[in-house]
Each structure stands twice: as structure tokens, then as C-alpha cells.
Image 1 (cartoon, rainbow, N blue to C red):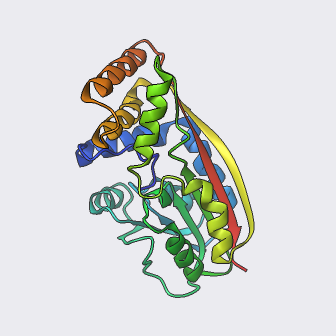
Image 2 (tube, helix red, strand yellow):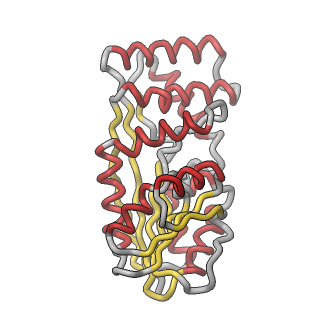
Length: 256
């Protein structure tokens, strides 16, 4: 999904979509998307793919820029939502490691907060190479799950929970590997930028509490430790003192 990946296994589909919508509306996320489009640099009428399209916002924004985008996601529910929100645009269920395109068919490839969810990011990068035409552009956006910065009264416990939550992600360090993944796949002119998202809105509390729930599920903390930490963060949100910072890495390259 094209999100900051706040999802929890206990969330309903609709709860997840609602949270993703709140993340997408954050001004910092809008600026991050815009920068990814600049790096993709789609020519009017060019076919580009948004891998992990979620509810389709980026696909709609790319279409408004004149591209001919296709949105792909592995989640059936979000594809249904994307089609209902953006009739007339193209959305399909597909896997990042098995794209439904011929060799050299596309001019652009974008994957926003996707590679950390893949067991084999290198395979996805190789698949991106395959479907891009010579001169085609690729842009990868993502967070490193070990670099979440959360203000709390217990920094040591917070560090332990962030690390434990990261270990539950298939490829938690994919974002720090974006550059080397692209180079290893054969891409050229690789650039890397970082933009830090700062979240203080209490409506995004589930993103923070999800760290504790993930750490508890992994057996890294007790139920009491998780509940106590969640109570503290909930109190911070009520007082307007919630603080989460997440560095977002943007890597861009060209297929020679």
C-alpha cells in the first residue's frame, strides 16, 4: 500500500482506509508525493505505474499531471476503494514481483512505502527494470523502520519497542538499501534524498500505539509495559504533546 504503513492486523479494512486517508492529508505527505512526481518526471501521455497504490490518490494526481497511470496493489479491498473513488482510472490487483506488463512497456515506475513489505526487494527492483523502457524513470519512497523517533517518558523502552516492531516487518531496512538495490539492478544516475515527516496530530495516534502493539505481539515487552506506554502516548495526544518523526527516503534512477 502507498502509505506510511500504520496497518495493524487487528484493524478492519475501513479503519485502515480511514487512517491512511488521514496520513495522506498530512501536508508533509502531500509535499513528499509532489517531490516523487518531480523525480519521476512523467511526459504527457506516458504510461507509468504506481506500485502499492492504496486508495489511488497518487494515481489520480499523476493523471492530473498528464500521465497515463496504472495503479497496482496486492490488497483487493483497497483496489475496490480506488476504483470507486477514481472512476475512469486504471487499477488492478498485482504483486510487485510479478508485474502485468511486457518488457520495456512503461516510461515510469513509482513505489511509495512498499519495499519494506516485500520478502525480496531485489526481485521487485529487477522486475521494475524489466518493465521500464530505456530512459524510463524509477522512484522509490520509504521509511526505515528502525528510525522512528517518538518522544516518551521512557526512551529506553521506546527504543526497544521500535526495534522489536521493526523486526516484524519483512524488510524493515529496505529504504536504506534503495540506492544499492537500484544500482545492483542496473539502474544509473541514482540519487537519494531524505524528507522527515513530523506528526503531532492526535488523530494519528494509532500509528504510534501500533509500535507498542507490534512489540507486544513479538514478545519483546509485557502487556503491562505496552499498556502503560500506550496510556502515556494517549495522554500526550490529548494534551497536544504527541511527537513522531519519520525520515522518508526518496531514491530515483534511470534505466539506461
